Image (cartoon, rainbow, N blue to C red; front, side):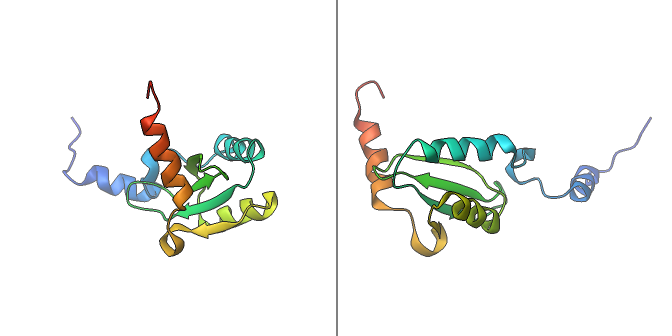
Amino acid sequence: MVEVGIFDSLRRRGRRGPSAGAGRSVGQADTRYLEEWAAARRGVEAFVEPKTTVTDTTVVLVAHDGEWTRRRIGSLDAAQRFGHKHTIPVYEVARVGYPQRMRDYTERQKRRPGS
């Protein structure tokens, strides 16, 4: 029989690193998706959302018409490298907020028939 203390699972988790993002790390699939999404749209800008206790750092790509998508990016530096590589401006959401066109797009989607 193995005795398990009430805080053992927390100690084990701490040795493996943070548990943000439900254990899923940023991978090539996330990056590939962002690249393909941005390439298929025009006027794309990137808005970086800071890491929280629940999620890793994420980036929201917003197209000219307000269509948007979100994926893990790993860090602000990673988002800036992504933006530089793909000629996409990168902003920090905490500093500038989300663009109005993104909110307008989301509102239009709510009003669409069948949504």
